[in-house]
Each structure stands twice: as structure tokens, then as C-alpha cells.
Image 1 (cartoon, rainbow, N blue to C red):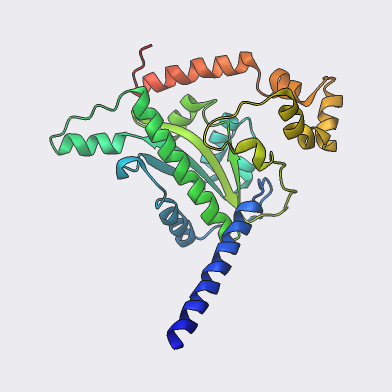
Image 2: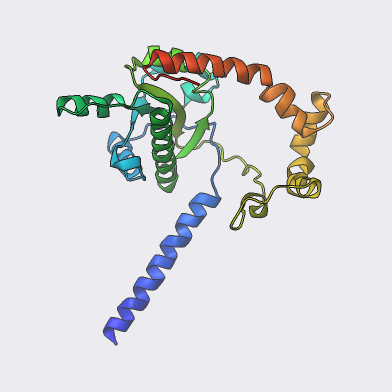
Length: 269
């Protein structure tokens, strides 16, 4: 009976922990306003340690994380992220980098010849980097911290490389601002699971599907306001004509490819 009681207690314990984790994931917000409270160094190290338990290709851990807390460096980084205020206001800015430098040096020092100066290797390191970044975000939110993911890192990768003194085979992939939230914003809208999940094989979308899956996003008053203020016909045009234009995407692609080659990755098509 005692053993059965312990098993029941463990069952409820793990159910409670599972629910807590689900709540952390489903209640995620992008925090852009932080208090001035600093994050203890011990906590930062705990969170990084938890983050590095993420899955990684071949257990190679092809990433490095640059922690920025000094005002001087944050001000240098700010223009690389279009001067978004959370860069200088957050107590901690983390730049997650794809890093083959460390692994290649280990190979060379052990009489092994690395062959990782190619696109596939860069992609592998990028996947590792994003996995560890997401692990960090979940760990940080579980401890009451707020985070904001910045998609601007690859826009100005070359400048970030110079500021953070990144050597060859190290490329910045994403930036996360971290701090204790001052304001808790509403949750961002998400597409329904039906729009994302495909069973067995990919099932392409017809016109009715697209109308159905994007109906809620298009119905939000904030999004309707964007469309009206920018004199567009649809929310989709906000993305294609203003936020993420073909011209900008092509320019960023060209700059990023040049930066990757400068960092030692070779491409041939």
C-alpha cells in the first residue's frame, strides 16, 4: 500500500509539473519594457546551463552565447537592431551565435581535419543555436523573467561581428533581451493548430483554408488599424509592402551571404 501511495503521489507531482510547463509555454509574451532590477550572475549561469541541455547535432554544441550587460556595449549594439529601446533598457542582452570556431580548433588540436566551411555546416550550427536559444527562453520565463526575441540580428550581422569581436566561423543568429517585466502585454495571436499540423503528408491549402485560418488575425482591431493607417487593402499587404519587402529581403540576403563568406563559410551553386 505504501508503494502504491508513493506512485500516486509521484503521478500527481509530474502532472502538476507538466501543467506548469504548459502554462509557461502557452502564456508566452514578448516583453519590451523591463524594470531596472539586475539579474543575478548566478541565475544567468543557471539558465545558460539549462539552455545547453537542448538537443544538438552529434552532441557538438555548435553555438556560443555573448552576454551583454554594460551600457557602452548595448549602445553600440542598438543601431544594429534599429535602435529598439529594449536593447539599451533591458538589463541583459544575449546574442546567440552559430559557432564552428571552437569545434574546428578542437579537431585540429587532436590531429583531425575539419571540413565544416560549407553551407550545410552553417545550417547545422544555426539549428543548434536556435534550439539552445529557445531552451533559454523557456528556462528564463519559468523563473519570472521576460524575454523578447529580435529578428534583426541577421540584418546587420557584419556590424554585430565587429562589435562583439567574433572570429571566423562564428556568426550571430538571434538576439534575446532579458529582464524582469515592467509591463505584461497581451498575448500575440497565433494560427490554429489545424493550420499548422499535417497528418502523414503535407496537405496543401485551398482558398477556403486560407480564409478560415487567417480570419481571426485579420479580424483583430489592431490589425485592421494597421491596414487603414497605411492605406492598404489587406493585412497581407502590410507584410509584403511595408514590413518584409522583396527589396529588403534581397538586400539582406546579399549582405548576409557576403558576411558568411567573410566568416569562412564557402558557397557554390
